[in-house]
Length: 243
Image (cartoon, rainbow, N blue to C red; front, side, top):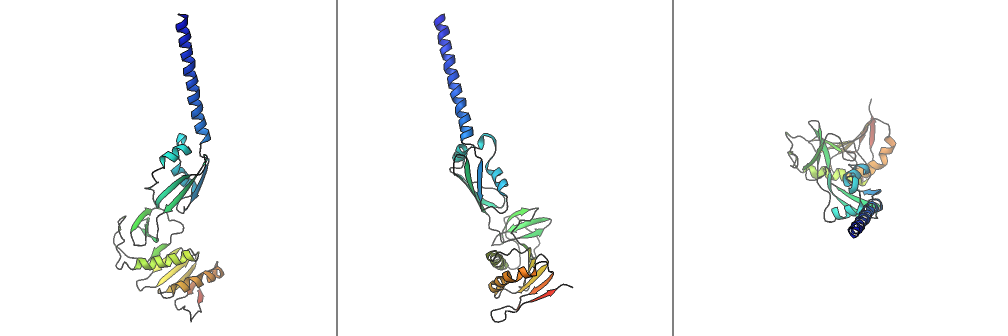
């Protein structure tokens, strides 16, 4: 009887030791590999905090070992405005999230929504709110719109022109509030209360480059800047204040 009691006692002690080891290992893994630092790169539409919340689901899963296994053979997809996100483990406590956002040429207002389209005029996303850095395009006409389908405009060559203008603005660190494309091929840029008449697409690169130097001098003013006749030989531009 005493031997049986001693055997049970030994088993109980062994079980207790195993439980202590398991619990200690769990506590060690939860603390030693807990992610406390998240580096986010490439995000525009979402804040770094929003990206962090997408990647770290909370609780025990905020763990670099878990994330290493979970993201080993997969990327984050199916997030609006984002093509994909890569998650790299930097240290036990730090990860780096590289965001690859969808290439947006511009957006349109339609039935209370902002529709975002790519370089081919395909509507890739819709949102109730505008996105900083994506210009609002005016002047396009159509009867209906479908997500993931091309915008049904009369001449789809307009999208190449839109992309050219938006890329030039980005190249020279200019952010237009709106861009208006007339049916005659003329372009008007809106920067707060300043309207810039660019004329047609001729010499548009030189015009935007010159515009970068002019706009700071027009801060706080209201009126129209005439650049429609600007070229390498005629470099004079005229600003006409609103009355």
